[in-house]
Image (tube, rainbow, N blue to C red):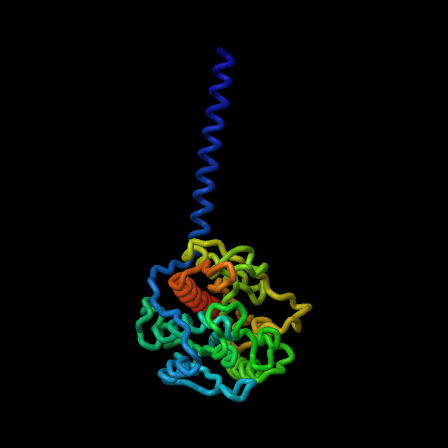
Length: 321
C-alpha cells in the first residue's frame, strides 16, 4: 500500500512540475511577444528588372530630387530623393551598392513611392514620418553596375566601372560613388542609416537563413533586436544577426555601416547603422536557385524597411523625451 502511495506522490509531483514548466513557457512567450512590432499589411510591387534610365525616370517623379554627382565611369548621374521635412532629424537609406542586387533598389523604390503617394498601408505612421522626420534615399549607389547587371547572374554588375567593391571603400573613399555618398552622410548627419543588400543562398555568413540584419553598435541592441525579432515574426523564418563591427578595427574592411556608425549626429547619442540582406534569385548551372519568391522579397523587404523606420523613430523619441 505504501508503494502505491509513494508512486501516486511521484506522479502528482511530476504533473505539478509539468504544469509549472508549461506556465513558465507561456510566460516566456508572452514576454517575447510584447517586444514584437506587428506588421499586419500586404505589400505590392514588381521585381522585373528595369534598366537604369527607367529607374531615373521613376526617380524624377519625386518632388525633391538632387543629383549628388557622377559615378566613376563619368557616364551616370547619382540621385538622392528627399521625403518629409528637411528641417527635421534625418534618416538615410541606400540601395544598389552592388548592381547585381537590383531587387533591393526596386522594392525600396516602391516603398518610397507609396510614402509619396499616400498609399502605404500604415497611414498614421506615414503622416508621422513625413511631418516629423527627413527621409534621404539613394536608390542606386552603383549605377554602372546596376545598368550592366544581367538579371539572375550571380555577380554580374556587382562592381563599379573600375572593378571596385564599393562596400569596401567607405574608409579610403577612392571611388566617386562612395565619395558622393559620404558627402550626403557628412552634410545631413543622419541619426539612423540602413544599407540594403541582396545575398546569394550559398553565402557562408548567412547561417543558412534567407534574412540577415547587421548591427552598428552593441549599445543600441535593444532597437536592433526589436527590429530583428519583428522581421523574423513577420516572415515566419529564422534570421541571422550580425554583430557590430569591432571598434578596434573600425577602418577595415571599409563597410558603409561602419563609417556611418562612427559618425556623430546632433539628435541621438549613437548613430543607428544597419545592413539588411535578403536572399536573391540566381540562375545556376544546376537550375534556378530561388529560396525566396518575388512576392516574399517584396514582403520581407518592405516590412524590413517599415520596421527600420519604426524602430528608428522609437530610438529618437526615447533619446529626446
